[in-house]
Each structure stands twice: as structure tokens, then as C-alpha cells.
Amino acid sequence: MRKFLALATFLFLLQSVAFAAGAGAVKIAAFDPNEAVKNSEPGAEALKQLEAKLKPESDKIERERKDFIKLQENFQKQAFGLAPDARQDKERELRRKEFELTENMRRFQSAVNREQNTKLAEIERVLGEVVRDYCAKNGVTLLLAKVPGITYYVEPASDITKTVTLELNKAWHKRPAK
Image 1 (tube, rainbow, N blue to C red):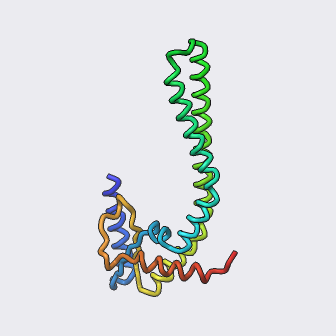
Image 2: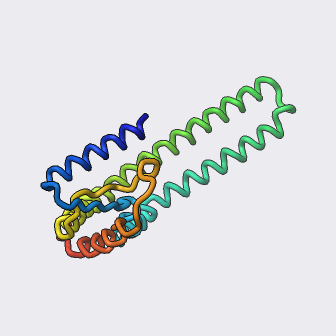
Image 3: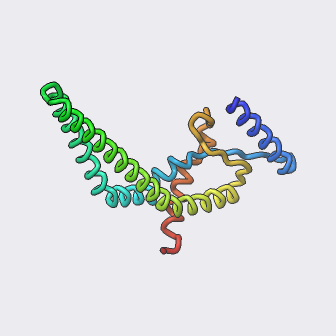
């Protein structure tokens, strides 16, 4: 049903664009914004900065995860030999450690998402300008984003992802530094 609505909306928009263009030629193109950002110089630079900034915390989380796994394995080996009270204490300690690990992982993921959004905001702003300029210069009437699950096929000649990525790289170098 959702895909049908998306298709119906697309056809309606296509008809509207054709009508607005005075029934003239409609030029449609498509691009993958995620691929454009990922393969661009600013995207690669942002990813490298993000990894460098978050690596210490990532390593800490990984050590905590490995320590928890060792505690779990040790408990499983010793569980039958422990007195009931000692066993309950160990189980409580394991649950507490598991909760702490889960919380630390959740906080880390939130930090990663915040940092990603901060880094991507400027890139996406420049990308928006690049796309508008490209469409205006090349007479593109309708530009579609290639989205997995929604866009099933785009004629390779209509896919401007590589061109947009190159234009993004140029625009990124020309933008005023902050």
C-alpha cells in the first residue's frame, strides 16, 4: 500500500511538473544523496575526523564488552560450585555489569549520531546548493533521490550521482571556511 501511494504521488507530481513546464519537455534525473556524500571529499574527511574523535570511546566500550564476556564465561564455569547466596550475588553483579555496558553503548551511539549529524549538516547544505545549481544549469525539471526500497530502477544515463559528487567536491573547496 505504501509503495502504491508513493508511485501514485510520483505520477501526480510528474503530471504537475509537465503541466507547470507548459507541457514542454520534462527532464528527469536521479541521484543517490548518500552515495554522493559518502564518496565525496568532504564526506571522507568528515568520516575520518569522526573516527579519530570517537576511537578512544569506541575502544573503551569494546574492552568493557570483552570483560563482560569473560565474566559471563567465568560465572558459567563456576556456577554449579557456588553456594546459592554467592551465586545470586554473582548473577546480580552480572546483570549490573550488563546494564552498565548497555547504557554505555547507548550513550556512545547517541554521541556518534550527534557527531554525524553535526558533520553532515554543512555537507548537506552545500550538497543542496550544488543540486539546485546543477538542475538549473542543465534544465532538470524533476530530480529524484534514489532510495532503496522505493526507487527500483534508474536509467544509467539519468543517474547524475557521480557528476553531483564531483560538483560537491568543487563547491566544498570554494565555500567560505568557518
